Image 1: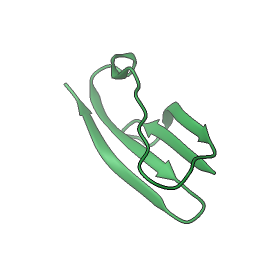
Image 2: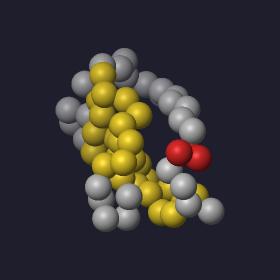
Image 3: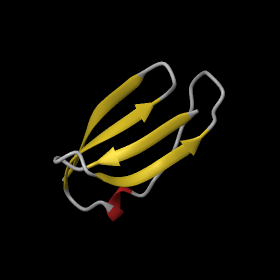
Image 4: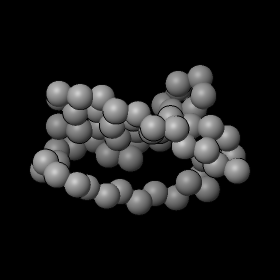
Length: 59
């Protein structure tokens, strides 16, 4: 089971990109970042065994 979410700089969840099961390996998800507006965001991928985050800057 995976969860892929976007959080604002205060770490409030502002968008859920995926919340389902996925096979292991490389996956891709597209989303319209214009819905977020400008600013700094954190994209968080949570699996049963790991949590990875990355900074997303939108001008």
